[in-house]
Amino acid sequence: MSTTEIGNVPFEEAVAQFDPVMGLEVHVELSTVTKMFSAAPTEFGADPNTQVDPVSLGLPGSLPVLNAKALESAIRIGLALNCTIASQCRFARKNYFYPDMPKNFQTSQYDEPIAFDGWLDVDVPASEDGTGEAFTYRVQIERAHMEEDTGKSSHVGGSTGRIHGAEYSLVDYNRAGIPLIEIVTRPLTGAGRRAPEVAKAYVATLRDLLRSLDVSDVKMEQGSMRCDVNLSLRPSPDAPLGTRSETKNVNSLRSVERAVRYEIGRHAGLLRAGQRVVQETRHWHEDTGLTTSGREKSDAEDYRYFPEPDLVPIAPDPAWVEELRATLPEPPAARRRRLQSEWGFSDLELRDVVNAGALDLVEATVAAGASPVSARKWWTGEIARRANAEGIDLASSPVTPQQVAELQGLVDAGTLTDRLARTALEGVLAGEGSPAEVVEKRGLAVVSDDSALTAAVDAAIAANPGVAEKIRGGKVQAAGALIGAVMKEMRGQADAARVRELVLERVGAS
Image (tube, rainbow, N blue to C red; front, side, top):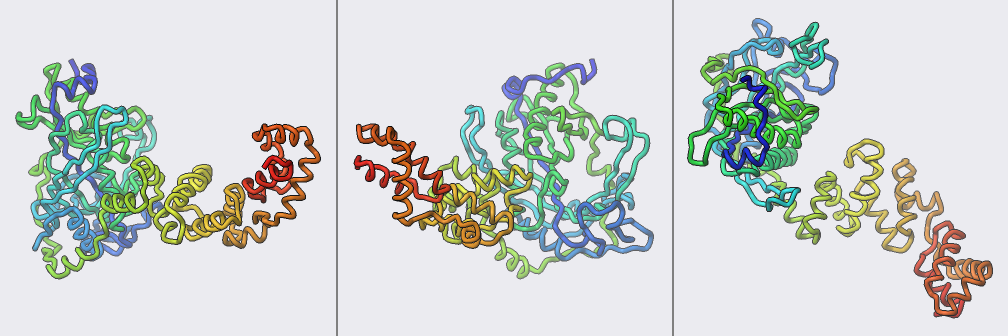
């Protein structure tokens, strides 16, 4: 029986019978201006083969020079992951053939990484189906090492986009040599049925941490952060580790969770059928939620590592390392807990802010003078709605936190109603100026002149005598019709509460 005929075991059955063990390798492209070992640029989306030079093309006689900013970023990442920073480390050549690696070896770190023996605490939220509570899982970090990225092959023709069945292939060397940090965990054990959620939460936590360090844009959809998911099953937690598979280049949080869940079911199907799990790399297919076989996985000795002769060992000055430690920002999880306490948000309210990508925006809006409640309302409500309609990130919206705070200040002062404030926002987004300038240009301010309001109320009463009589008869709720008429006459530029007071007063019901 072939492995394709065996089929996956349902997830709950699989985790009831087997203990899953994971190892996650996250590759992060650094936001440097130039490549890891040369002065070639690193602009994303440039025309193919325009961001290259002799070093990244592997031309004879070209010599690498380490990017100092990449080294600094690597050390800061290691420190943020609670790693030990090596007093001395070096690069090695990892030998294998790929058409998109023109040197036919990758300059990486093998037995002497820049950072090692770290950890990262991960807050795993409660399961969406209510079957598991929130908890904290400590991920042990084995190493974080520096290396260079490969180029990119595109296979043209065929139906899969892969080399099998393609008519021809194209190679773009723009990505070759871009600085990478690879963060490798130790085996993640003890998660049981929550393993897929732990994997997703870890990658999400790591992404937030790297973003806060400002070392990478961590855009998974563009490949600047991607995860390799290693997974194996064993009969029980005290049994030896099973044979692992490695699902390569998973590029979304949702896919990390789905890939772990799928591979657990696939491994269980093989083991139940008495089949052998092959140590191999596998491809993740986002459209189908399946993995397919790539190649049998090589062990370290297969890569014939040896020290890179063209690069000297690295010995970071301990004083410099401590200077870099002092530059580390507040950890994202700690920052979220602090802000939640300061703002008085519930877990759900904070989650909405975080999921909307609005945490920095809300914080800046509060710093500009708005209340946390009003800042959250604007950024997760009207502004988010408009950003979604335009297909842009919230942070790309042309309105600033300072303008949102000013807009809310006009509401708090009674100059604008909520509806008028949304109209003023339209003007700000259209580039008509600050909220105050838009209010003045468009004549949006609330009419606070009682004489004008009284005249409008009297006109509404005269036009609706029957309604006025109902109010006098005790049906106060009927006042809504008169209030609506007045608000329409005033083009919404009236305080509805004050209009209600005047209606009841003028009909003699107050």
